[in-house]
Length: 386
Ligand SMILES: *[C@@H]1O[C@H](CO)[C@@H](O)[C@H](O)[C@H]1NC(C)=O
Ligand SMILES: *[C@@H]1O[C@H](CO)[C@@H](O)[C@H](O)[C@H]1NC(C)=O
Ligand SMILES: *[C@@H]1O[C@H](CO)[C@@H](O)[C@H](O)[C@H]1NC(C)=O
Ligand SMILES: *[C@@H]1O[C@H](CO)[C@@H](O)[C@H](O)[C@H]1NC(C)=O
Image (cartoon, rainbow, N blue to C red; front, side, top):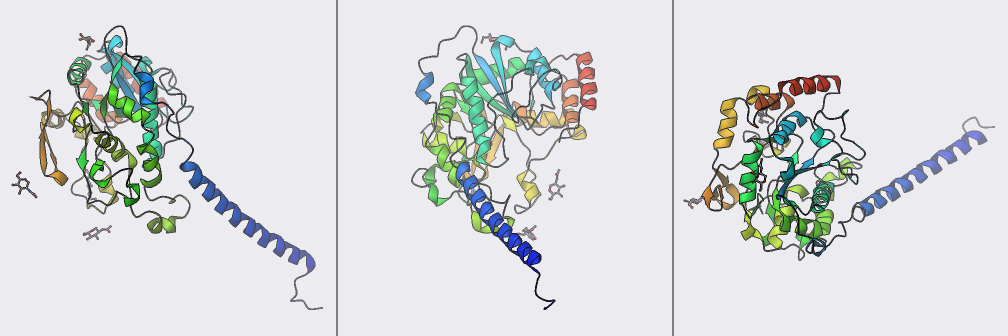
C-alpha cells in the first residue's frame, strides 16, 4: 500500500475543502453581484413628486429656517449651536438631524435640548463619497418640507460653526429670494462620465461645495428629482468596489466622482434655475493649496483647532467679500439682492476646542458659562469623537 496515496478520510477532506472553496467563490461572486445590483436599486429616490407640496404652502407665524445637520454620529459642537439657537427665536427655526441609523439625540447624547428627538427615523448608513450621501441630504430636505413654514433649508456638517448670531443669519438668508449654491463649470477633472449623456449633457455638469442653502422651491426640486439622481447613483462613484477588490480599483471606474460635490449644482443647472442662485456657498472651507493635487490630503479641508481659531483668523474669514473661480476665470463679488455683503455666514471644519473659543468670543451672542461647563464635563465623560 503506497504511503503517498492519501487515505480515504484525507481524500474526503480534500474534496470537502475544494467544494467549500468553489462554494465560497460562487457565493462571493453572487454577493458582489447582488450588492452591486442593490446599490443601484435599493434606497431609490423618495417617491415624492415636487407637485406633492404645491397645494400646501399656507402657514401661520414667521417663515422658518430649517437647519439640516448631516452628521456621522453625535453633534460635537452642540453647545455652540445651542447658544446660537437660544439667542434666536424658536418660532423662526427648525432643526433636523441625519445621523447613523438608530442614533438618538436625548439628554445622554447631547447637552442641548434643541436637539432632543430631532434625528430622522428613516436615516440610512452613509458612506462618505458615495451616493448615500446625497440620499441623506434628500431625506433631510424631504422631512423638513413637511413643515410648510420652513422656507429656507441650510445644510450643515458636524464641524460647521455659525459666524454670526441668529438674527443676523436669519435676516441675511431670508432677505434673499435666491438659493446659495456653489456651482461652477468643471470639465478638466474627468469626473464626468460620458455614459451620463444624454440624461446629463456635459455642458450642464457642475461642481460645487456640498454645503448649500436652498429656497423651498429648489428643495422641492431636489426631493422630487427621479431623473438625475438614478444617473448619479449609477455613474458618479468614488472608485467603486474598493471595499472588496482593491486591486480592481483602476479598472472599475476611471471617473473618480464624488456625488455630493456635483449633484445639486448639476440638477439645478439642468432645471434651468441658475438665474435663481447666488452661485456660492455660505459656508467657508479652507483647502490646503500647498498640497499636491495628487496628494489625498489636498482633497480634505484644513481643520481649525483651538490655536487656529483666533479672533484675527475669524475676522479674516468674515471679511472675505469675493470668491475666485479658477476653472471659469470668474471673480464673484458676494452680494445679496445686488448689495455687497461678506461671503460667509458659516465655516468649517472646527474642532471642539476651536468652537469653545468661538463661543467665548461672543460670536453667536451671549452664552451661559454654566451650560458650557456642564457640556464640557459631559463631553469628557463620553467617548472622544473623531
Ligand atoms: C423672527 O421672524 C420675524 C418675522 O420674520 C422677524 O421679524 C424677527 O426679527 C425674527 N427673529 C429673530 C430673532 O431673528
Ligand atoms: C498641507 O499639505 C501639505 C502637503 O501635503 C502638508 O505638509 C501640510 O501639513 C498641510 N497643511 C495643513 C495645515 O494641513
Ligand atoms: C505628485 O505629482 C508630483 C508632480 O506632478 C510628483 O513629483 C509627486 O511625486 C507626485 N506624488 C505622488 C504621491 O504621486
Ligand atoms: C482671466 O480674465 C482676465 C480678465 O477678465 C484676463 O485678463 C486673464 O488673462 C484671464 N486669465 C486666464 C488664465 O484666462
